[in-house]
Length: 119
Image (tube, rainbow, N blue to C red):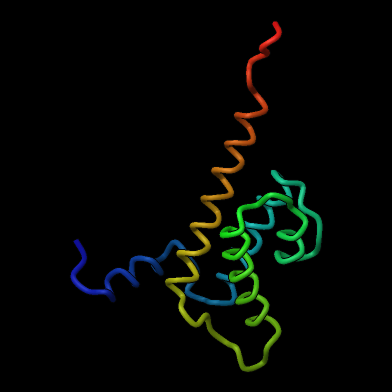
């Protein structure tokens, strides 16, 4: 299907996401923070704090979201850090994190709608 690795990288970084790294990291963080706030009642001011406030998240998911938050924070706060080091990996990690959160939301929702066994 793909001719070269560059074809895959281009597909991953296509028009679905902003070409501006600053906008990409901010939008990704906002999306994950919204999911954590809305469905997990997260507390805190940023993605790191919100992740820390949600008990029982899978350790691999916590690690992925901390990576995303760290890249976002470096872009915003460090003068010499002006681009995502591996944009395709960043997008892949964001998509995997968002998908895993959505799966957890579905599991929590279906678990709370179990039929009554006493009735």
